Length: 222
Length: 216
Image 1 (cartoon, each protein chain N blue to C red):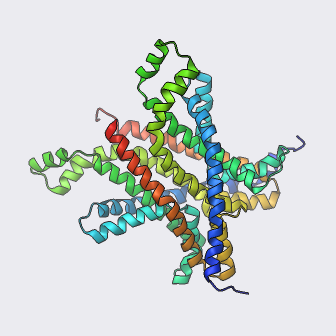
Image 2: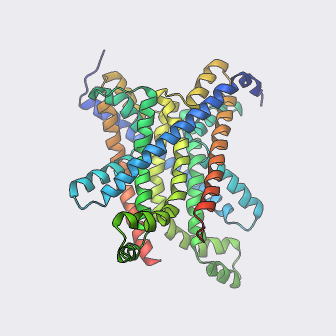
Image 3: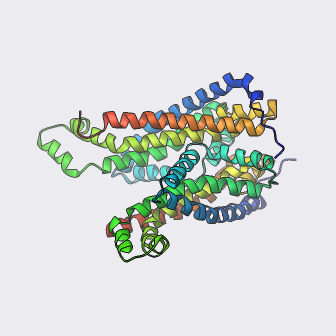
């Protein structure tokens, strides 16, 4: 093997790489926050007795889950301008990630709501609680307990998915790595470093989520 | 010259489907083999093997597929391998997806009641016989539904091959989009084609899941 590794060539750019990590985390956070709202609305819509609403929610979830994210990003960034919606790369990335995340979150949340036994609602109603109170005091926490691990997994998936928005030149870790690649010509080193940065981010978040899960959602209730 | 978006443009996007399917199939075979090794290591009695498989899974589930493809693409030449897009993408996908399939199959193997392997052991069966004729046949039944669901993930994953220059469905849509200046139709059509491939698989997976859920 004649290749000489030269990680030193990347040292002057460490701030840019860290900035890339920051942008990636911001993207993933926006995606999960907006995606969660979309997911809750969609999960409720899927329970609706009105056929049309149910159909729209189901189609949205199935369409997003059964097409690749890359095509969704391209459709939004390159395709939507034809309909008069021209977005900057960064906004297009946030929109695409949120829509994608929303479809997956909808399924997770539906699982959480379905996981609550019917008797719980009935018991709440029997105690004279209003529907909102039943939801707030009886359904929410056990549902959160079911939903939280899946949602934190979804956050990490979104964190990794953000790398794909580099293909529409939205700025985040992968696109910064690509621009450093053309500056330094140390492709292999750059992508090793970027990969390790992604790995550290996902491991740090996984550890945090596990701790939160243990503290807030463990039995017996504190 | 700007091309019109006609029948032949739809056909040339469709021609990418073949590469998408062939790539998925080859990757699935590779992933199946590596995934089985990962799953067996993860459930093995040797702590070293379990540890190793665990690290493998953490690494490939904790980093983006795109980065893994770049690493293979730029890394293989460093180790003296010639890369053509086919090998780079197949190797990258195999590494990535085997971590996920390995975890799915590990779940299947661990879902087989412990008494089964204990009984096999009591009958004097060695590791190989125990695994191939007692554990795996039952684990496979339990794993069919999530494996079909995993196929959807794999097929969607092949779209990233477009970024490293491999011509499949997404890439051919990209080419047509840039020659016709009709990205809305090109990407919309590609999305529909992916949907037609993936949606039935998702439905089959969900149906299998329900059927096995009742029985167990």
